[in-house]
Length: 170
Image 1: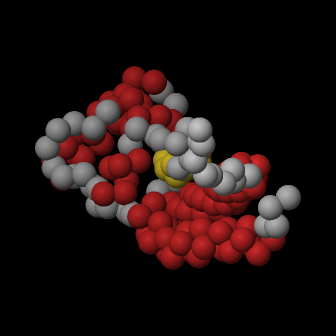
Image 2: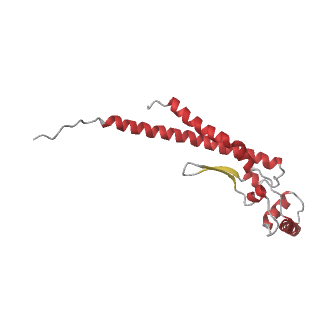
Image 3: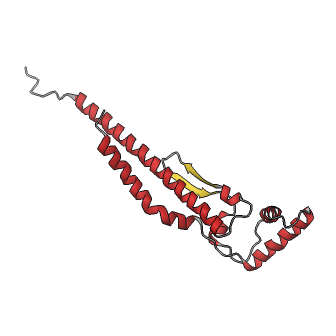
């Protein structure tokens, strides 16, 4: 009795292809990740310069909170993590009191007073004024992102091209 007719394909070549494909993908992702981190660092650096240029550096807390944070999924966050960063970027409408403790720190850094009870009073008065009148937006992060976003796409494409040109499957 006959088992039919068949051809046994060599699977070693297919296994090698799968390994090469995985290595290629990993190299592209590594290069792309480096590009994202570089872009994020440029965005944060540009935003820090804007903070200084638009007069938003008093205590340095906001400026120093700027950082690049790589995420588990391969993305990268570029941001400012001081709790009032949003209000500097977008301004604040009248209504609702801002945190007096942050304003008190600003008063201390500006050496407006050295008397603690006076510092608290000044901070409270400033907070009331902000609650009544709001604050003007002083964008710093969004303009820096807008300035750099085209470069992000360029870096991703460059990473893919660089790996493709230099990859020989070994």
